[in-house]
Length: 547
Image 1 (cartoon, helix red, strand yellow):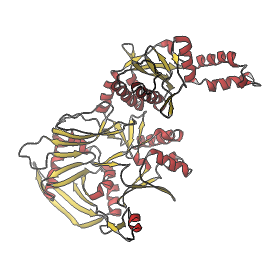
Image 2 (tube, helix red, strand yellow):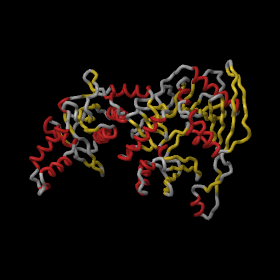
Image 3 (spheres, one colour):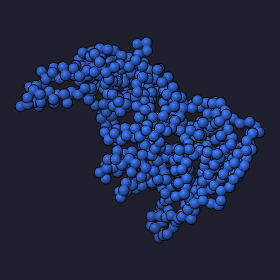
Image 4 (cartoon, helix red, strand yellow):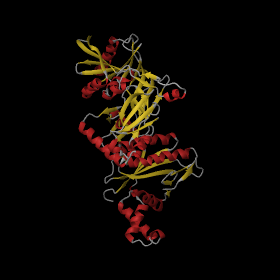
């Protein structure tokens, strides 16, 4: 059996791909033309083969150890990289050999492989790689034994499938074992051009003519240049304010190959003349490099280069921009591997159905506003103006300090305690192991509340992160003085003038244009249920019109 890793080249990137080939690869021999009868038509395929520098030698990565024992000058020959380019009509395909998939993946049509995967039946599902954008587990690899269902959850999209196809007994174009990502990996009967073309023709025919068998949630590439420009500008604006808004994934799928950014030998981080060599690649290490060199992330996100080494050989160079994961709420898009993608309808449909399951509560008496906050400060002024901290200060200065001390959330939590019978634990910390942790903002009737006021996902998600950390401590009895808990509530105070629509008296959180927040609520719901508690979302408003 032979191996075929087949890409389709994005039509809009065809010229860029050909330019990259000319710069980095050598054409081998002449272009060959193969004519095939397909159905009622005759197709002409032009085949060209490209090879990188095959004779390059490099010092082995662990040469320091050889030097220690008196052995010098030991080198290893890098694996040659080859690309077979196939043109037919206005379409271009590429078959990769060695590490050449790193370059081809940048120019591929990302819809091609999964368009094929939706149209064939599976006898067995072996592994799936699922993406959950902006969650702590943002890429998960699942393996299965004797399993045939295509399993996934809300908030997840597919990055890779490894399956056994359900093929007719006399089928001979390729084997049943398939891998699907940005490319399709086939087992072909022989390593011949005829077998390569047979598989390509079959895949193209399936995409053009076969009905969809599976609804697979994946990301759809954004192609509008004006939308991409707007997305990039918002990304820069956001990380200027909050560099931690972006994630660096530890796992990438290049074609159908898993690349673990922590385990792939060595990395070089470069920006101009500044360079650092590291043994793993994490967001913390990148941000440390930026801080140590007095750089600003939003200014250098495309200038920082990450070079990956395998056995001392450079196999991949990327800008930092190509390695981060980021969600744009306004356009419902995700940045992954340097490309912007829309969430497709399958993804959004599964997510909406999951959020509809959550108990969502709105009680108008708990709405908050700047007027109530100001009155709270006035009341506190009456009680605290004569304190030692305010000796010699005039009224306006004392109130300014009080407003900083009793910021919106703290004032809200204290008011809930004083007026509505909640127990306030805002800014209270318990010791767990060697750390101090804030477990909750409010507590009442066996319900733990995490409260956050905001108008964007980046702010509101904090309540869910706090809640997720707390319930693990409650579940595992890591502190003996904890109250009884049955319900876990994320209390979201939405800073907006108009309320969201309601369905049967229940706020419809699916109406929120905050995709990052909705993804996080979905994951939080599953965490809470898995630990045996009941998840609740309470919705209230800050500065609601008419308040």
